[in-house]
Image (cartoon, rainbow, N blue to C red; front, side, top):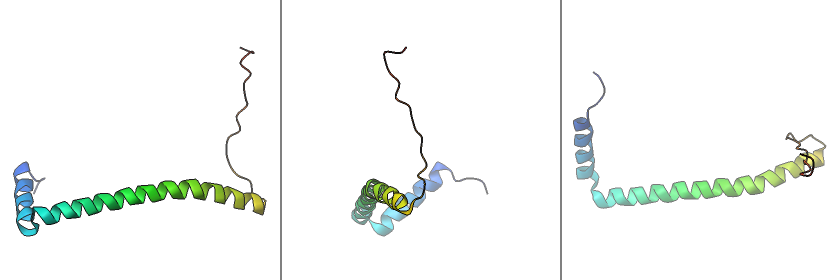
Length: 78
């Protein structure tokens, strides 16, 4: 029992199309795409809002925030 060939996958695809129909599969695909898009937007909003809130809470509690300090290099000194 090795891996499936392309013919096995084509037969599975035809059976799925016959069972569900193209319209229902198209709706499922668009719903799934919308859910993924909403999840990504939520993660971006959570990162931008959550990062500021978390650092403010740590400062209020007196904890150290980890990060890198970079020295500003004077461009006249080369």
